[in-house]
Length: 530
Ligand SMILES: Nc1ncnc2c1ncn2[C@@H]1O[C@H](COP(=O)(O)OP(=O)(O)OP(=O)(O)O)[C@@H](O)[C@H]1O
Image 1: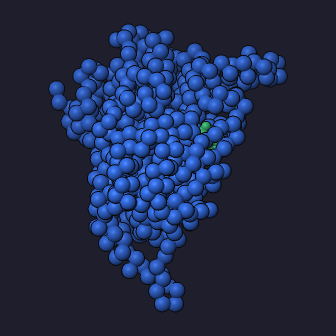
Image 2 (image 1 turned 180 degrees about the vertical axis):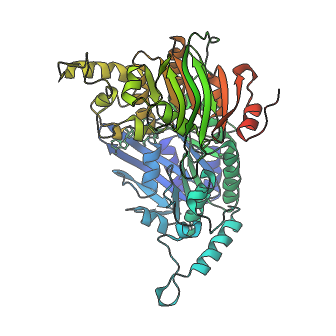
Image 3 (image 1 turned 45 degrees about the vertical axis):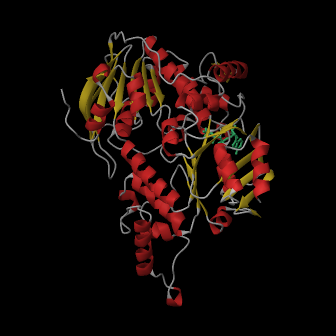
């Protein structure tokens, strides 16, 4: 086994110091992928990938969008089957036909989109599919509740077993997902971009949990695009590019810049270069816009303005009304009262179509729901709002050549991979889907750009492209409203920063006065300091 492991590692690159030491000590890996290959239409998603997970380590999987990380993790969790290669669990080859096989072997996974039932309690969610029954097959809820409580105490995962999942913040819901895996006796835990939807405090809390699990011997595989976090929590790092493992390293061997370059195969600017703003006429005026929130959401009441040639960043912890505000501004939600004007024209109740015709571009927070038609091709998505007009149609007849020529040039300009205009958008990785939205929205005369979480799920190289594109739109005279839960993004791009808390804008600062600390305090409901 030890020699095999060493051979496996050698096949995909040099073994790291730790691999070597552990092999020498005769330890058996918790989980191993050996030569995993997975072909997808138009892409080799995994190409002879080797990965070794040791007990008691956090192993980060990094890679540019479309590198094959999710595919590999889905295979290790039995959701997809490889075309070639083997999976070994504690020194034995195993076959994973489904997630139930993986769970039975002590492998758990927490997906990016949680799989919990919102109206069930924490205990009910954890038990689902693994119910404890007493005599006569009846559910033993008291015992189940006690076990959930004991498990959460044992692992330091603080949750109320009786709370309704829908009432819990995202970070706590994630704890429920982790507990669900641990309840099924997971010794290997796969986490797919676990910090993408968390607030900075929730990220810190999660890392405390991960370190505790590690100390108890759990092997943790973690997909992430956030290099700072990877360096903070990982013991080892495997970097993938175009389906292959390209580097194996550890946080003490590399800095962020080097990691970024490993991921995308070139140097990446981790900061955006931009000239000071030169704001022109007022483009967007929002006056006491009231939008009613959902069941558990705050009502929104906002007043703001954005001028041509400036970026107004809206900072805030997610769930403070940003989504409702953006939906009201882009015609997706009816405001209850107030007024919105675009270049002086009242557009308070305008339809998305009218808004697009007035010069609105929108990068939506949820690209699957509001940005793309997944079953349509890349080309069709690129012309989603313009296909019935010249140059893409004449007298009601679509000009296929014009559509494909435009789509091909956008695919090239935004580096969409694979570079096909015919591929269904559903087959692209998340980051590449985002590039399609971005290309379409910026490829027209933009008066107002509303960009909501524009780089969520994107790799550092793509973030650089998106940030550049947003600053370029500003420099061409667009007014930009940027909504982001990422403080780094707000600080990097904004000329002014407004902080949203409980549905209201609690402060607006010049970007030069906005520091992480100051914004963090305001985002948590603190007072602005002079
Ligand atoms: N079901 C599928 N059909 C066609 N192509 C697919 C399918 N699943 C994955 N692919 C392709 O396989 C490659 C790897 O995708 P995967 O989702 O694993 O990447 P990733 O590294 O997780 O990317 P991201 O960071 O953007 O989530 C991509 O080129 C993707 O287009």
